[in-house]
Amino acid sequence: MTIQTDKAKLRQLATQKRNQVSNRLGQSQLILERFFEHFQPQAAQNVCCYVDKEPEVETQDFIKSCLAQRHCLIVVPYCDGDHLRLVRLTDWQQLELMRYGLLEPKANFRTPEQWVDPTIINYFLVPGLAFDTQGNRLGYGKGYYDGLLKHRSVVGRAIGLAFDSQIIPNVPTDPQWDQPMDYILTPQRLVDCKVENSLGNRPRTH
Image (tube, rainbow, N blue to C red; front, side, top):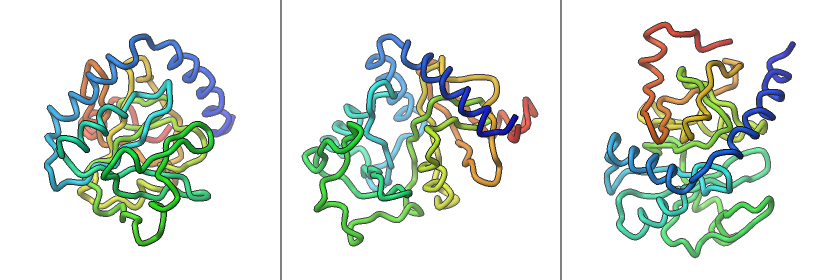
């Protein structure tokens, strides 16, 4: 059985499990509180954060708070063909509802002059269907975030946001393409994936 077949089956199960999460908003708030507590982003640091679509970990209140309080600089992704582009968000009104029900930057904020280089991002807050403690991530199958994260710099940290039920024993991976998380945040825990790997709990590749 191939990795892609394994992933397809796992996506079905992971989607069902995530759809059953209750109190999504309250749990999401706990996750983002943990982000501030553990990483303490600075006002001049760049945080790339997806704009959630239910039933993902909710990020919209977090983004609005950062814009209002200027905790950090917010960068949001949008789909451009087969790639994710990044633009800096300074006002919530720069977003509009696009295809697939996604909130993305309006057309006049999508010009190449406004693209943000992934190498200047300090923290990438990443969605997913499932994660394991070694940092392997089960995405939606398009490879958007893997393509983006391969361009991050050595100081860019990839942080998966997940409900506790999304942490599973083993996510099948292709090490030539799949980009691992550095950390995973849930309402109950912060997983340092490098520490988990150093403990030898399970090899990163399947």
